[in-house]
Amino acid sequence: MITVLTRSYQDQSQATFSLTDEDHTLANSLRFTLNQDPRVTFCGYSIPHPSDARVNIRVQTTGDPASEVLKDSCQDLMLICQHVRSTFDQAVVEFKNKKGLDAMNIGP
Image (cartoon, rainbow, N blue to C red):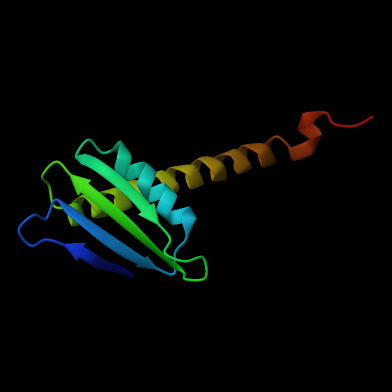
């Protein structure tokens, strides 16, 4: 669940979002995809306390609403994950078609 912690209704180009039940895995991945977006001027995340399963992500943009930019980055991250999964699945099929370890000529 995503909660908006701080946002100005006059300036929607910057906001801090809180993601519950998340950790560095998603936060760092989102930070990466956000920083690839040319609309983003600043992006960073923090974990308020190690025992709290919550991540705060700060987004500042060139003018577009921060919530829209975060949404777009989440979609980009999902596409990246789908590509990695399909590439991995394809490699597994190819490996099995080559008879697995027998094709690697491993042995004495």
